[in-house]
Length: 234
Image (cartoon, rainbow, N blue to C red):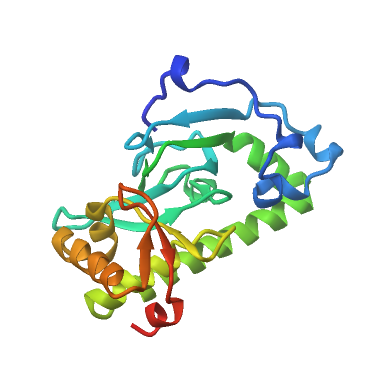
């Protein structure tokens, strides 16, 4: 894992009991007895967009719960191209594979400014062994991650450029408001959809022109979805 500069990222030990997104994260079902098993610090970290949280094949120091922002998981293909295999959103866990292999199987890079909780592997392993609640939550998170990876592949890597971009917009809907989608740099979208940057830009512009989505910011990142049925049927 690429070292994080302490002076810019360290905020102290997380207050897991009072976490604002606790219902969404690994520790949602823990009780006071479970918290008593935690003897290693759980760090709050903040990274700027473009920063690497960890790198492929690096030794794992822990897993990360995403509190705010977006993270892309990137792998390099045999021919040297970068492919985004999944996008993580608040409540998702990065690095779960490290529990089995002690290494990360992709690069995790901040798409936006992010805040995460870094949970040492020793904490997860202790709690998983002694807390049925955390073990159950771990299995749920792992199953969800596998299913989402399969869904990304099935929905975003097949079909026409219009279909891929349309389905991507729907994938990026906010959990809090299904009428709002947050996109990101067109180059990154192309890496995920296996499309050229120019193709992605053209298709997004066409969706705006045809009244299916409406931009809500000048950067072209946040859109209101006006015709979800048409996007789904694209």
